Length: 266
Image 1 (cartoon, rainbow, N blue to C red):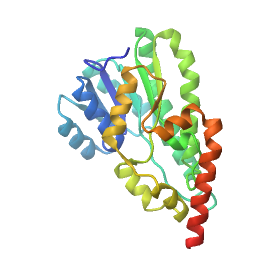
Image 2 (cartoon, rainbow, N blue to C red; image 1 turned 90 degrees about the vertical axis):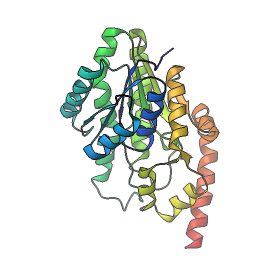
Image 3 (tube, rainbow, N blue to C red; image 1 turned 120 degrees about the vertical axis):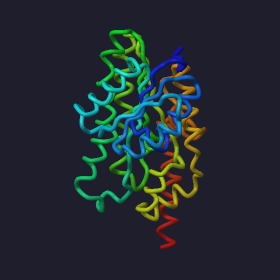
Image 4 (cartoon, rainbow, N blue to C red; image 1 turned 180 degrees about the vertical axis):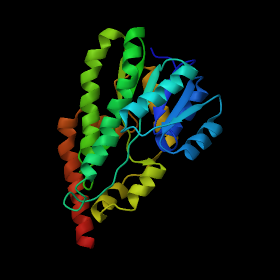
């Protein structure tokens, strides 16, 4: 079992939303917490609010050398990373043919390669110590494709494949791996997504009440401490994760009905 008390937990995208909520929850469980994100003022404010000696460092997860340097700075202060929560990510909703050409690359670089960069910065130390836990934050959209998320969903599907592959590779080295599938979550990032959602996407997400970030964080931390590979927050996503092949057609039909209704309304 992974224990968070006295563990050094590093979270990327830790200045707000799910990442900040994870950091707050981990600190309450006795962890030494470090935050990484791009903007220093937001990081400093989050660290001050969390307290408990929370450390922070700025880095863009797309920049592997800079991210490795930030993690080196944090581990020099707080000890080797025991738990990594690779949470940094974003989405720009839009129809496939309307999104800018470079948006697909941009989201893959942040959401998927950013997680790869973070994991590779800590995995050698974990392997050498034969302990540690990597947690990748995917999405319900990493189990079932959602209208308007053609740039985002593939990045979250990719995280699932990464987690499933390196789980087998790292198990003999005593390193645990988790992949988390949060549903729509009430965060600043989600509010920003709402500004550019096509009406069809609004119809789908409008039928689902966003969950608080604190609830997602609690589920993530419970899952890590119980060494769960698959971490789900809500029952619908849990069903999709357990039986994606069976449930996906049902979810697709439901989403198609929401899309048709939105288009008729227009």
